[in-house]
Image (cartoon, rainbow, N blue to C red):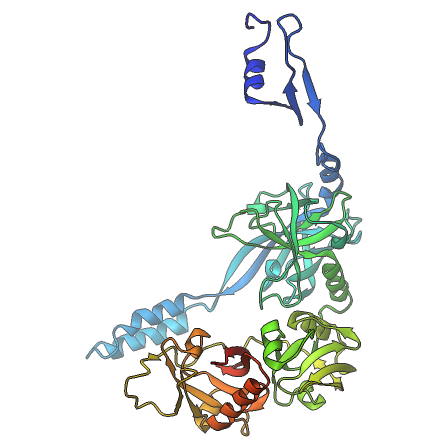
Length: 514
């Protein structure tokens, strides 16, 4: 005790602001030598719990670890190929090492056993468990470990790689503790959330944080999901585990983290409960998710694109290309069409269009309201079923960026448009075939991009093919110049170009030189 009758710890607390006692913040009173210091407990703000213990105690029995044995491709053979490659062309050695390479290929195992782990949670009393697709992918054995240590063999019910969701069922009959899906739309940015799971194989771990953001799009790999972003720490092994609101409802299924190290940096992503419930119900019923398919490449109708087309206050998805023989082609959709709504439900961009089409039942006729050349039309399109092996098209950019000096003599074929800083050549048959275009498709190949020109500033490179300008086919350079002249006469500042880059058709604008 000091001569004032106060402990040294209390004096330090008075100097430095506050001490922590239990879960309440304690601020020392001003004190006198006679009375000493009396702490005052300050309660947390409304809505902030003193503890998450009651919530966790309630839901934790339904949260499980998911242990998986799977088969994976062996990659060592590719390394051996690189090793043997160095001996090619060496007299007396090439044949010997070629024989060794072939022997290695025959003897090397193509697959190996791998072990992985994740998290999951019971959604029914009879033992249905939700987890991530990437947790159980290629699984040959699945084991569910409960919070009380019980180990239960499980079997796969169904998976949906496009939303990274899966359902498994424990084989042992029983009455299991389970949790229910809630609504992610009822929580706001800044509300508390609690994540449970099996990080790094530790099992039974709870973390708390807030909803940092919602509606996160994570690129082409997740076209059907607007993720919840949470800062409750989640790590490797948390995949497939639940995120709860303070009522104990599942508002998200943990799926991804953003991290340079693989550990939590406070940015995790969960699949919203509404989507998770819809997909898991379908998996339980059918074992798979069937999605509608149009067969188009689409992009957002950005304000920049709309300005180039002379459109105002129009939202939708711009059709960049139509797959030959697809439902879209049979239904009459064409490049440069703008999809405004599907069955009366308005679309705002390519993502909302993709998700609406995905919800359509295969082989049913549906109404698409479109804008074509500035005029509204309605098409009745019978959608197909999305192929299971549909893969992202190649996005190679052709010949790369060969910038040239505009004043240097050039042997490169094509006509130079000096005001745009680009040299254009009508597309030949070999280029058309290499790009996977139809026999009748026309366009202009960029053969040179002038340094500091309009096309270079817009990011164009050699090898890109211009298919259309403001919706007009451009089989010749003259046709391109006429499309520019029309845009100029309409007082537009940009031209919208439909481009073929590798196997992908997309759009980009260029400024019209004054």
